Image (cartoon, rainbow, N blue to C red; front, side):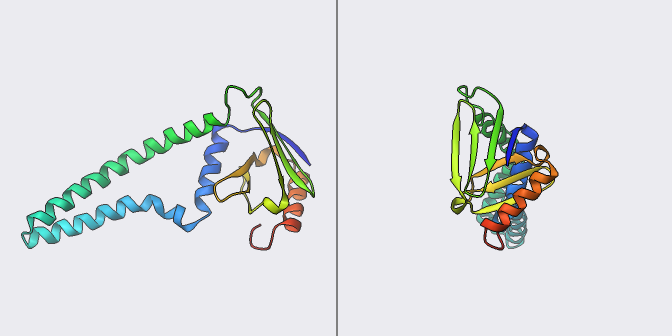
Length: 172
């Protein structure tokens, strides 16, 4: 099976969202700062009632930091996402078109002028797909990314068959 595709910024954003949904810890990270803010407000109120100004002032400082983090986080996440997407297309890359070839022995992804990655099925850790993107993990944070729309129905069925044969149950 051979698929040619171009990854758009929208595809990359969808892949990051899907990647975040894969582990419980990744889903909890966005809730850390709001939780910290709630705890600080409760501590501030308790310290105010007991007239403990040292603890109250520390709670206000931490609450201000968590509010700042909650406001800044989406902005920095967007900038980081743009930076990472642009790194996929270094100046040496001759074309934005990528090719991935998947068969019974290996997976080969070719990015013209940039890189060629060869991987046997033993190196594949996980497989995730939704309506927009398909990701084949070869590390906990590294994966082959291809738009699901770039594959025909028969190619999707062939990929499902390959994954069923080569990945252990629970990783499909």
